[in-house]
Image 1: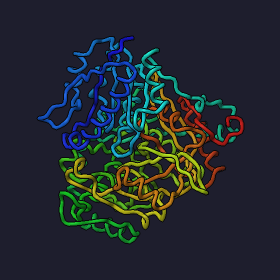
Image 2: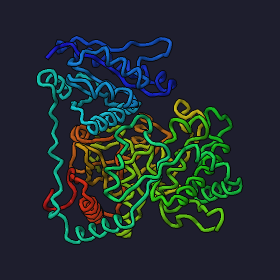
Image 3: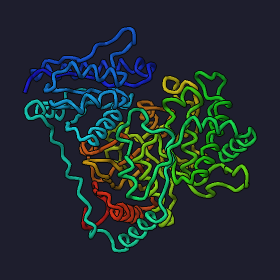
Image 4: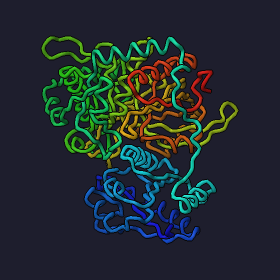
Length: 539
C-alpha cells in the first residue's frame, strides 16, 4: 500500500458556516497530518485553501467531482471532518474511488464534526461503498494510532461490534410477538403517509428511503413543497398565531427576546413561526399525513424564521390547538403529529412505528431524533458512566424536558446558519428510561438498530460546561446507552441521528422495545438488538 495519502474535507453549502468553522478544520488537519507523518506517510491535500472564499472546504457537488478527478483512483483517501458537512459534495467521488477510504473526525462538541462524520458513514453504507472510520481528541492516543497503522497495513480498521446481534424473534415475549404482528397488520391495512416538505436536506443521502423500500412496510410519501408551506402561512390570521403564543406563555415557555432582528429572537419572528406551525398542521390534515418533515435549511432559511419551534410543538401531545379553517374542528386533538427533523425519512419511519407501539401500550408517544453530538465519561459518587450529549435544533418535545414547558426556553438560532432567526425549543432532558433506535438502509434493505438507555441529570455546573462546549441554544439530553462503549457505538451507528422515546421505568422500556422490535420484524425489517436491552436471553 502506498504511503502517500490524499486528504479531502467536505464542508457546508453555506459560506458563512464554512468561514466560521474553517479554523477548527485547519487545527484538525494539522494534528492529523502530524500523526500520519509520524507513521511514515506523505499527506497530500487534494484541494487548496481558497483565500477568496475564506476556507478550504469542498463546498459543492461539482467541486467535489472535480477534486476527485485529480486523485489517483487507487490511492488511499482520508475524508477529515471537524464540522457539519454536506455528504453529496464528496459522495460521487467516493462512489467511484477504488482505493481504501478512511473517514476521520476530531472528538469535540464545539462544532458538529462527529455528526458530519456519522452522516457520511451512513451515506457510504447506504451507497455500498467500503470504508473505515476512526476519531480522536488530539490524534496522539494509542487507539487512534493503532487504528491508522492497521488501515495503512491492511486497508481496514477493526472495531469491537460485539454489542450488536440479530434479533431472534423467539427471544421476545409471546405477547410482544403477537401484538407486534397485529400492529404490523393494521399498518399494512390502513397504511400511513409521511409528508415530505422537499427531500434531501443538507446533503443527507442516508436520510432518503426510496419508495421501493418504504411502500412494502405500508408507508407512503406525500411529496410537498416548502414554497406551499410559506404560501399557506399567509392565510393564517394574526389572531390565530397570537392565541398560540398566549397558550405557550400560559404554559410557562420562556421566550428570550430582544429587538435586533439580526442577532436576537424577536416577537415578529415568533409570530411567523407560529403561523408556520398552524399552516403545517392544516396541510398535514389536508393530505392525511401521519407524520411530516420540514427541510427548512436550504430555501426556507432565506424566506422565513426557523422551523425548530414548530417541530418541537408538533411532536408533543399537549400543544396549542389548531382548528380547521372551514369546519372549526380541532386537528389532531390530543395527539402528537410526529415531525422528522431535516426530513430524515429513517426517523420518519421510526416515529410512525413508535407512535403505534407507545399508543398501544398507553404511553406518551412523544418521540424525537437527536444528533449524536459528543460525550465524555462522568464520575461522581452517584454516577460512573460514559454520558453522551444528544442535541437537536428542533423537533424535541417539551414532555422530554424537566418541568415540560415551564422548564423550556426558546432562544434565537445562531445567525451563521439562520439569517432570519427564529426560536428553538430548549430544555434539559428529564431523567428516565428510554428506548433508542435507528432505521438505516444497507445492502438495499431496511435495517433497525435498537437498544435501551437512560437520560441522567448531571450537576448544574457540569451541564453548563457541556452546553458551553456544544450549542447552547439547543436542548441538552445527557444519555447513557446501556451496554455499549463510546467507540463501539460510533463504529456501528449508521446515521448522524438517533431516535428516542421515554418509558416510565426499566420494565416498561423493555416491554416497549420488545413490541417495537416485533412490529418491525413483522414488517420484514432486519432488526438488530444493541447492548443490554433487558431481555434475559439476549443480555
